[in-house]
Picture (cartoon, helix red, strand yellow):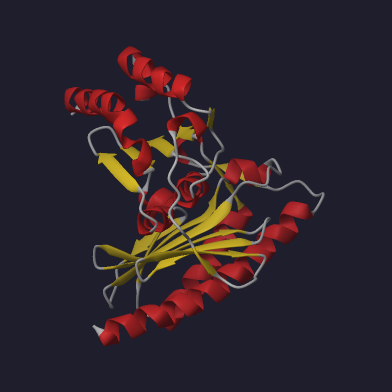
Length: 271
């Protein structure tokens, strides 16, 4: 156990330094007037040269230091020789980055076998570093002292609800789901669709938002931020049949019962 803890700490320290370096390059590019070069990959998704640079920079440094595995949005999977695997989204919120909308991040998680043991989400524009490890969550703003997060309870009437809908086949367009979702919206403060799954889950984890609903997600979209949210007392529900993930503040759980029941029923029909 002590050996594993030491191994995790070594990786955490090393990864944090690398993420700060990668973030500096993204920040410099973001503030330049020159257009950001993009191209389309499968499923009409946008990728930039910076996505690829961050992927290769982190992969080469981390896998040179440790005989770990690698899962990333922008490169082939590498099997682990150590039991540890890194999971990366080099720019979560690529469309925001391309349009100079300052809401994107680098998302990196560390798994030991099948368990998430550390997560890092770095917002390079606002210089805010979110981390999760040792069953706790931390926020470090502008490189000042890291602070342990505290759980924040919310009323639905004062809550923001976030969501991300990727395609026209989404359950968001189902009539029964729409009805329950509309009832939640009426009772809430407002909704948000911000374009970065990791940062939107972080907002739930910090208590700034009460719920995030995403469909058709991939592991690198959510792995790091989900650990951050869970470590600060948030709950999650995965409906594998429909590729849905809900991350929410337990203080509004009673208001979600009908909505969740409807999603589960639709998931069974679609399986």
